[in-house]
Length: 366
Image 1: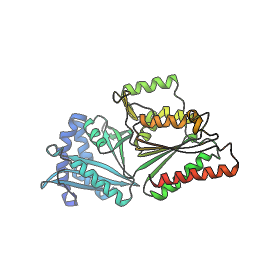
Image 2: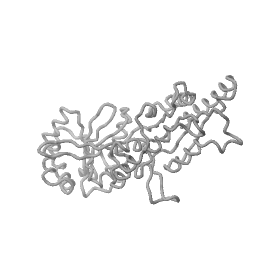
Image 3: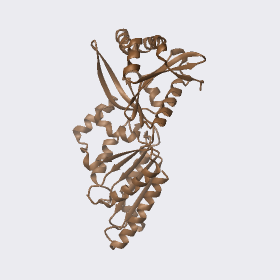
Image 4: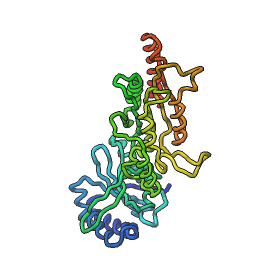
């Protein structure tokens, strides 16, 4: 990677920064949004007066990328509660493909870690395919679309993209009953996980509190049309994007009718989206998973005994293991307590305690 110096822009250097911005914006954005809107946006956002106001009044910081003694590009940032808003990151055409943007993102990532900020977010024009591909290669994921009226008859038609700084654990709570034993296992896991990984983000999804609906003929046709058009950024696929972006996944659900509650099946239907959690045309089955997670843990309790001779009747873990492989998640494990409706209370308590200890160990070793 090219050696790059990253130096904060001083107030007296803003004119120089504005001149650099005008060169880069004109050559980069004119083919995408046209000369008129490009010129308008430069004047509104990247002129010297605009950037001085941003730095003085809005908490913006700008940095030059210095490569071989030359100013090769720049970035502009602003703290946004527990996040960092990456307002600008641009590299001059002749300095691209030298890893300068990657070095800039690494610099910002270290800054976030030092200040405890949880993510970097940015906006990018929906039709800026090159930049979108670059951001994805730097671990950014599309969060949602955003259309902003910037005046003078112009709008910014963007995607919001995010890069999480600390690992995110997605916990899918599929427990239905108030006093669920499975939730007891889940809470034991989470307590140990938070203690062992205090800087990680725990994203809990309680399915019983969400408005998930079964995929019907009508919604299926609607989803299929959106998939064919490549429109995967809408609310219909928000949960699929959430699942695909997680660094690790825990699913907690009791055994019902040899499998798990129907709400889990409904959730699986909603996250199974080609182009988000998997894609067609590759692999032995014609599909290949594209989820970020390296591990999926299934926590469950079973009223009967489904190990030994009856193991073939247990379908919940079997299905989730297959789905983990389908979604490209290489590491799958299941922790369970069984016989909870068969044995005396003392035996059930012992079995639950053993499962809780296994869950706590898994959390610490995650």
